[in-house]
Amino acid sequence: MCGPKPFIHWSKHTATVPKGFLRYQVLKMLAEKPLSGKEIMDKIQEQTEGQWTPSPGSIYPLLALLEDYGYIQQLPKDETGRKPYQITEEGRKFLQEQEKQREEYNKTSIGLFTPFLFNHICPQIENQQVIKIKENMRRIFHGMFTLRKHLTQKTTEEKIEKISGIIQTIAETLEKEIKKLEEETSQS
Image (tube, rainbow, N blue to C red; front, side, top):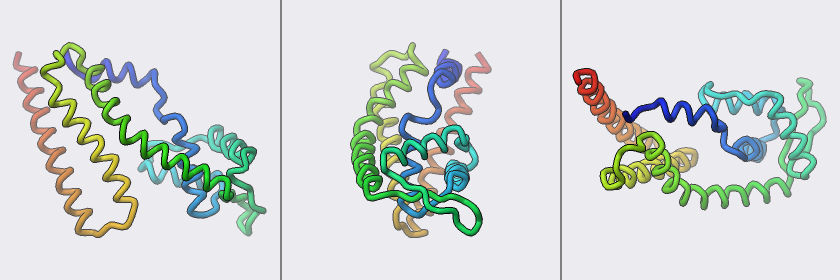
């Protein structure tokens, strides 16, 4: 049977936050403006729509490490009593290198990840049957990653509306097909 149970089991034994994600996000935020550790945690919680808040036990040791490497520096306490950090020139150079690596990784990893994920969830489906599905899944993943990059840059309300409509149509179509499959499964 093809279903979510193997994936759930697999995901429980895999880190939910990719390695290097937090370091990259912290440097990216500090490149925009100085922030305290608490502000960084709050901003990540906001960006993930409440799905994840890094703990102080992950943020503060990371800030200390980034400071040791010379990528950030702590500023004096401000009037509110917070101790903000700011990125250094060395940190900006490192962030640029990370962004280049991330771009290269996104070009290649989506194609590798999608077939692995599909084979892991549905291993009994023969390869010939899923070649088109894998390719289309790769295209969708790549499109979503690329789309996210473009939406964080300057865009118009018209473009956002159009993209939202396309994604909504895809989601509704998939949901209808899943419902049909579930009905067929429950009848047999």
